[in-house]
Length: 446
Image 1 (cartoon, rainbow, N blue to C red):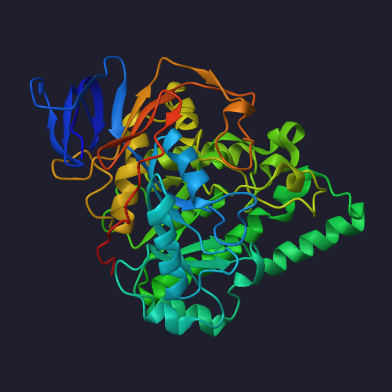
Image 2 (image 1 turned 120 degrees about the vertical axis):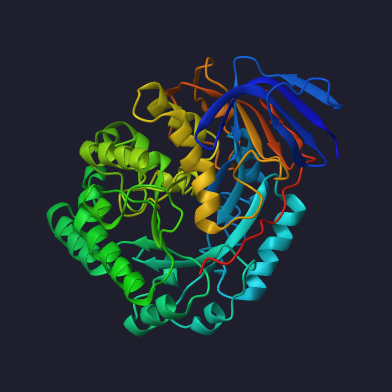
């Protein structure tokens, strides 16, 4: 493996900022700190004026493989991810067929080993009838168990009370939940169909996938987790009300944690007028005051991790009516730069951004030797140029679906270089397609 020396960077790591250098050898960080110039390296990068931070670890993506590869696949989406400074990802189980057993998990890992530009792990999906597969999981076989406690995706809704009790009582791994209450959503859909027929406006989406639907489901998840002392991670919070479930502060020692997603931190319901179904997602983007509360929760630690929920669909699919257009949007390429919007505005400091996108994700999932700039850790790094604003344009999109919800928006910082396991995976607009990620390692969460 090649060696690399990065000099004169503004290093952001473990709550501190330092002007200094970082040396990479044999895929790992060999030294980090002050003046390291003179260390032997195949390449020296002068990073003056740029920010050096650990690569983002995305705890929630939908790369659509197997079965939905007309809209995305591991190879294409991991290319977009490294272009956006994401060095590791955890992929969701709602593929075709769904990932409901160990054989399906291992098939995904094998495929990622062949084609992924970033490091990877995969969730085992929960269903109403695979509790034995969940009970049989061992540390390292996957990143966690995904439970759809809402009608988000096909036949993977877990709505049997006994099954939910068993999952929270017996899962040996972290439980990650999508929380929306199905009966509430169906009642809201019926009311809007009665009023509008099939021509329901997109502005109704946050009222159909409502605050109450989110609250009922997340309250149930929290109650189950507390009763069984389960390790619960609630994904993609969208409401200020739900923040009452969570405690501020460091992720270490928490049994119940939360994720916020970049699009819920960036957009609000006023954007439906311009973006329409392009920002239709489940749970829905909601009110400005919800978005503001989510950003504040990222700042104080009630939201522990920031992910993308990258979920591509084709433009043809998105062109349908409210009920026809699928929920989900592509996000990995511009996610990290979009978060610098909050840094620039003073809502977040850059140390907190690094904690929520890297450190806390590694801690929450017990990822081994990643998520920090530490000697001996894998060299997963990103260099950000905070002086290079850019406008998102369709022709630059690397995701297979070919579009971005950020199109036309100017973002305040640009990813310059992404390093995965010590190798430059992306630089100045070009992906290095020879780089391959590695399977992530985990420690026990219980």
